[in-house]
View 1 (tube, helix red, strand yellow):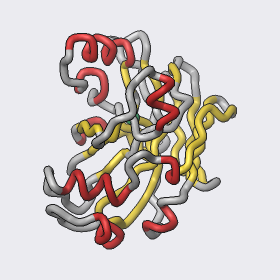
View 2: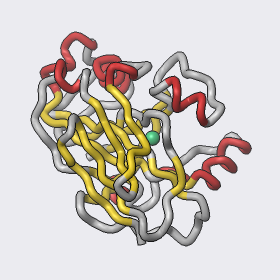
View 3: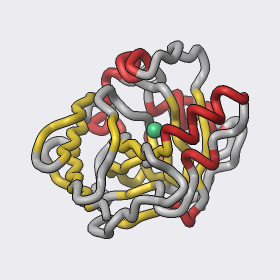
Length: 202
Ligand code: ZN
């Protein structure tokens, strides 16, 4: 399986990191070894001093897709969840400065926390809200309605370049409110008031 992630898909988040709003989707990938299932602990990696959380809505692909038009995407999604795109912001800053790829900052082991999946049709997913609680306090809140590139556009765009298979995941980008994690933190992520992911940091 493959894990795709979308960068800068909410205008307010692009702005908080002083990035331009993209005119085509910004896509990167994480390997399968990046997955951290719901309920497990995230261990702070020794190679970074500034790991950030990015809470995101995650969709799951239901069957093989190649070059799909946006209007047909609704038949190719079989679940939705939430996840955390853990990002070593200090490493990413160096990558950006040098024009290097982002994998060292984004794709390390357990950098993709993933919640439990629920079934939902595309129409419902497209107006879903994500809420991130850090130690019980809300730090991120976003609606899929505010995505710069909506889900049909993202899936279509990706499928024109990469064949998608059943089980592939797409992290659809983070709303504003990202920030650093610390040992002892507990994150809870909700999709429409359903808690789908809990992880603690050690
Ligand atoms: Zn992200």
